[in-house]
Length: 263
Length: 208
Image 1: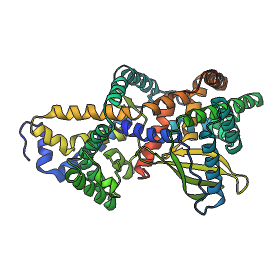
Image 2 (image 1 turned 90 degrees about the vertical axis):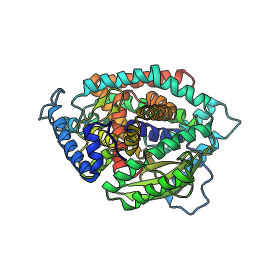
Image 3 (image 1 turned 180 degrees about the vertical axis):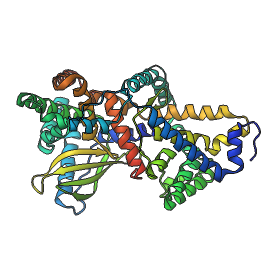
Image 4 (image 1 turned 60 degrees about the vertical axis):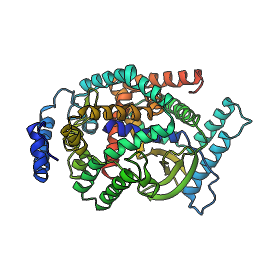
């Protein structure tokens, strides 16, 4: 697997991968420190005399809340105008078995990243499950279209570099919401970047000058995922008064459970 | 990607709370806490599958069932958090009334999405003063099962639900942050007004 069209960074990482990964981790760790260190100071910290209020302020840990709320609303608008309508049409016209095939296919292409992070976390058993799933589903499961492994008692689990950083003891950092991407506090933002650049599927596509397939996969992933959460998001909107604060809490609960491998 | 995973998970979760649906669960030997949860489930499913009841009657029966089995005042106390101590007795009373109504309406709405799922208690664990009963909601349409944990206060004969944890997401914790944010920007009276509106509009229209 050799590539010449790549940026020097990726090509270098490919030639000597074990070190490439370690260097990236170090670089990202540094970035994390910089981000968490610089983006503080635009929220009203309660006076130190109000101990409970200070404790709550630190637990909520959302110093950029006004900006985050702005991007949250931008994302909701994009969802309302574009993503949700397409997801509803997709769900309405696509037969169930094709939807399942698309989901399985995308999940299977994400297995290499899951495997790398299983290993980085020292989770031997889970790594074996992930590897077995990839082999079984790619072959017997016809390129990943059928999740044969789950039926054989090897259920899927998620893993990403944000979770790995968490398992290594890194804190999440202040809450951040990014345009399009949604909630991405520093730890998970760094994780997402590392996963993106170290994804072998991305290397293969770039090596064959076929990045547009990667974009296609991302779009399919977004639409398929959204089509599965329509009722949930509606229910969240109905049951919460401040949707932003509810989502912030649920995001953190979900990430913490994922880091503890409860999922 | 993270957000999508999160939403997917929450989707499964809420979809299935929707489905607090139950099989007669007495098939296996169970402790008193597990029996409490499975009995509650049996009663919920009896209401859901009773074809002779109109929607209004179903809602009324659910209301009775929830108010019997959920400690809405304890949940309300948790979600109000530190703001409870600075509230006046009148504010507390108003909050308790609105919050109980809100819980009833929320679960009514979620249960109205019931489509034949089954419910299974899978175990329990004592955690300090409280008991956590684990359960699964099983889809009849090939979707993966949803884990629902029930956090109970009290002991045999006096169990009450104080939290519902859907796919590792604690509902009372999410609501505490929701309410704290509203109180932080609009004050406790602002929260009460918002709850009043929410409860009022929801009871005025047919549940979705």
